[in-house]
Image: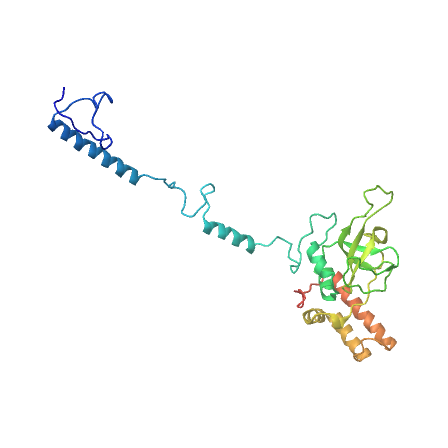
Length: 290
């Protein structure tokens, strides 16, 4: 039995070491052994505190600071991706871009709908000549009857009538609206472009793709053509000769009371332009198209 009493680390203040409190605490030690145990306990406690201070959550080595741990994408990479998306517009989707390929969703070779929408919002004779020329790949149609010129898309319309056998460019196919019912003989129609730059809406029965012996066209208003288109056309000898003849006979008149010779010269100038483009004549992009 121990002759004296002492306090052991871990006991509460004021509580004496009881011999029966646990298997370790009721053992008796000499003063020398007790001091050694106290120093050992203090060292263990210090190491425990240091280990706790140095611990904590760790960031995976492969995860960039500020990045997305799941995807491994940094903020800089994300911004770069956004920038690339802005720099690459949808192919063929820019209304200002002149299409080079057929729109894939149509059975005929027609331009992109965004381009068509902009084109038909106004009357553009220069762009019409560009599309009819340059080895035109777009679908051509011909009128099966005399038809009133109406633009159902809501854009500009020249009014008047299209003549039988008049040539047009097919811009878009329009599906028939039958309200979900199957109607025998119900067909769709087309949005088309005339040589004078105006757009028209035609029913399926009013257009054929079979070329007539001599296709017709409305007169092309020279004064409405962009400067660079006029310059390009006048490089052709026949067109330039027709232009000079018209200027001589019409003496600057563009409408109203004009002579028969002026009317013939005006018709000849238009016919010369159509023949030039049908023969593969090339024109630059109209300067005012934007």
